[in-house]
Image (tube, rainbow, N blue to C red; front, side):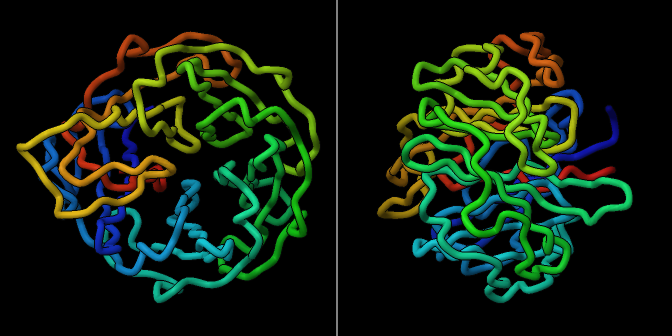
Length: 307
């Protein structure tokens, strides 16, 4: 795969939304648009919005700039960043988004599963939620292109799995591929074969396939949707006096980090065995450093962009 860039967003302490693009996503080179190879502070990147501090969870599944944001009360808002390819601040429903659902605070983790596209049928955007008991629920937002509140299994979802409470961190790279990272840092691979319609059919559904270890070195891990197995790890913060980002603190996921700390590196990996769950990797032993010293701001992946 060549000629693609991975979009990143991060939320500043004042709620500003910043954009950057890793143009080296195909091979792990340190080529970026919107930010240099070394982080200098949360004002790095290109500002594309404001007011994002109102949400407890924000995610994008790589589908044409579509972003979902969940309030502390569980309301889900839909946004379309029309300038997602180059970082221009153009939006559909940019001022507060469009309300597309509620009750999402019932889940401890919510993550995107990718876009469903079946010839002759409506497209849909798959979203998963994990309950406090570890149950995995499937939803499909059929109104993902325009922000209309049209869903398949919108009332509570479809139960497609259990036992997911074993993973403090779960993410997908689309096409039914889901990774779970245990508290000890082991990475397990799953393929939800019923991801397009919410049927509970799996490959390696009982416990997954072990494809890696040592992932507890990272505070945040996510993959490129619909790419070729690219995965990014954000190293745990280390104390520093060289860079500060204001007073007080903010929350990254469920982990509070005081300002004045940094993430040491952003590391790139490519799971070459992503389709079948084989433990084959490029840069599997520690990854490739693609960005230095990313400070403690909530980061989430955006779309994959053809360059």
